[in-house]
Image (tube, rainbow, N blue to C red):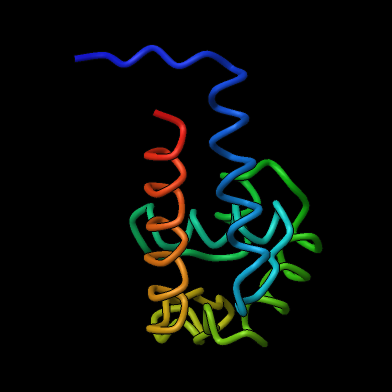
Amino acid sequence: MSIEIKPSQALDLWRIAIVESVRRDSPDLSARQMALLLNVYLTPAPHTVRGLSEALNISKPAITRALDRLSSLGMVKRKVDEEDRRSVLIQRTVKGSVFLREFGDIIVSAGLETE
């Protein structure tokens, strides 16, 4: 079953979700930070700076800056890869999982508002 959504409807859904997210007492993430967070949580691990850079097609320094912010918020953590100590793995955290679950709830609620 396919649902047809017009671009204006998709944008309105996104608007409602974003407005609700900024009204809450939760971190205000940039689009880049959110894209990175979603990639870490919704695609199979392991995640590295290099891999995320390739997946998102943005520079490694930009990934590092976004990871710095997400790490400071406790949404991801860095861990040295025990198999290759030159590599750093990006891992999920409980705080990041809770944030994304709540953000998903916001999107679902926004979808119900647009029906």
